[in-house]
Length: 518
Image 1 (cartoon, rainbow, N blue to C red):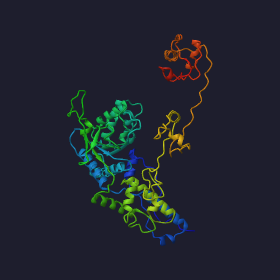
Image 2 (cartoon, rainbow, N blue to C red):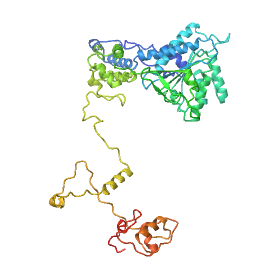
Image 3 (cartoon, rainbow, N blue to C red):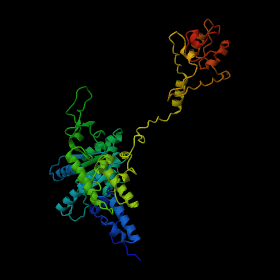
Image 4 (cartoon, one colour):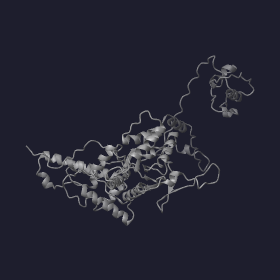
């Protein structure tokens, strides 16, 4: 019987929900508790039994799925700004409003993890300064100390649902409470639990096109008067309406907002919103690969990733040598979340096919997002951008195309030098040009339906009949519409056979009455 696996346990525990106090505390305590798989060579791996090899491969997969979040220059700048704003509010002795901070960035940039990691460090420092107790607790009682509260903005946010999300973090009971009671309970919970930082993630779910979204925005302003620092995290905050519509200065990399205009025509520069002046906005940008320091930061990040990989071949230089850095930047755009998914999936492929090496050919076999398609080995003929495909035509589009092809005027025949027709000298028909649509015959005209007593004429039909029959008496005007083909039965005059009703005619030539004697 083979011995059990001699490595540490890699099975995950219960799922962690950071939107509750218990889940937040457990995440803070266990966020660095995972032990990666040991580094083995191919010879050492071959000495193990099949069961031990299978368990070691599972441990390696768990290691690649739990890659640590490395500090980048961009995330370090954001974490420093968050810590500075929270510490300024926590150590302030004033009773004024605390300033907040907004963390903006695109998807998979690591905004939430960066903010949570920075606040976990602040919580550890704050608890150590107060001997892991609430300094404002009532003597003889044990209050729940929660320096940091993390919640998510509801999908369909209202002031009531937002207050309920905050109270759910503390485990407070809010059954049967009105909005005023909920706001009062939220304020009491923040004060009694010694909360110094309140994180509201996915804040851009507030579209501000509903009255409830505006009420939630007013509730956030009300929370700023509480002894807590607000941290709002979202995607596209500057253009979401939480602040004003702004643009980013390419030189200073700061957001510039236009002055608010009042109901008149003059700009009102002194009417800036409270959010603009009370909130600081910071961006978590992806890596760039243009200047020397930026390229060095990208190379350092890849080198740290190489140290976390658990492949049987030597991983040193696997991501940083040759043209691999440029290739990975082209595939991921410098986004750390997309890079992590690409490396994780590539390691799994390398373990399954037993190559134990990350190469361009291996990465070109799959995609992790629609925007990370492999472009290094794509030929122009196989590129999807090189093929022009027409959009699917609907019922009206096909009908319009048919009408345009049947109603197009035929080209005029060319004239010879002597004035004759060139088509007579060249009896062979010319081949149609490449790509030209074939001309379809016109659809057959349906016979007129039998006239019933409900058919009536209109003014439009009367004008059409009068133009087609000059000098004839007018038919009696009816209130309801009638088919033009049936109009002759009300006037007791049969219409000519080649009469076409389409537009209002003015002469016999336009009506198709030539050769009819009318």
